[in-house]
Image 1 (cartoon, one colour):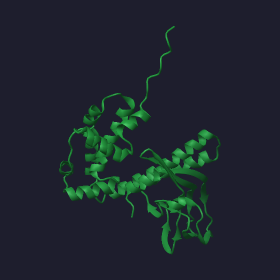
Image 2 (spheres, helix red, strand yellow):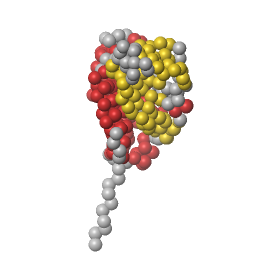
Image 3 (spheres, helix red, strand yellow):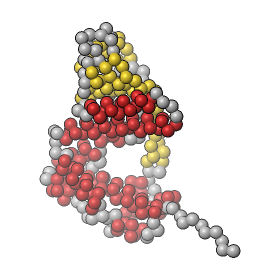
Image 4 (cartoon, helix red, strand yellow):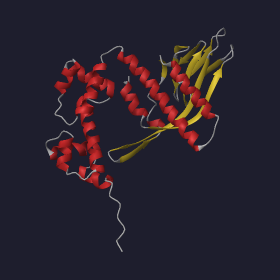
Length: 289
């Protein structure tokens, strides 16, 4: 089972195309016979009751339930004749396209299954309903800026779902302590931080802290700190002409050579090559007559 951090990592690599957005109130006799799903879609139940069967497993369809249907699923849907379901739905396509270590990577949806599937219980239903209402309203309009806004709202919808799932997860463990150490790393990344010190700050053993941190963020504590440092180093390399030794020291590395090795491992190119490619050069002044 994927963690919330791993789901967020995958969703953040996708480019989406919205096919249909709608709002449905089903009749009491509604029944969708068993069939194979052909398109990715999500259904947010806002009223009524029913039963959705996914790959042979029965799930209650009622307010506070969110369903993700992905291609290949065998699905059957019925409603309670005395309390028919009402829901918002979004059908979409996606492809995976992202940059990693200075290289663009692209894969089709067939190669990277959608990380959310089946039924989820959500507690922030009013926020999700608000976003679904906004999406449906924008669906009735046209224009390039409107299409851009729809995509932004879809990402906000996914982000709100992940926030809800993370909040549920936090009730069962001590991830508030992870938040504190992440905030501390952001403020003190240039200092000689250690795994033992961070675990002590969180009030956890090193092994427990490491497991929780990875579950919560998708990174080990040291990898998280390393990426923070490299992100800052990239800013300095692109926006300044500081010497490499100064940049290494300013992000927490006393050894310039070790910093260079770590930078190439994380970013994919050496600091000098990164600076050559990304540094903003001063505008050339016109010759004086």
